[in-house]
Image (cartoon, rainbow, N blue to C red):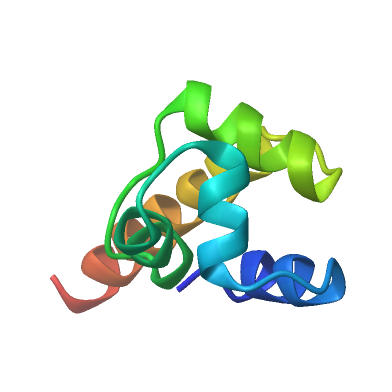
Length: 78
């Protein structure tokens, strides 16, 4: 779950619907990105970052850390 993304959206005082409209995607698509149910594509990450005024690469840093943590958990249980 991208809790940090929800906080940034709420700080900007935008609903999921409003943000999705500004970015040019469906609300359901944005909702899935925010909850972590869908990976974000770079061109959409750039648009969301621009609207919410943050470095769009944060999406991929978070994704990298999630993959690393999953990999480490597997090595401990193996």
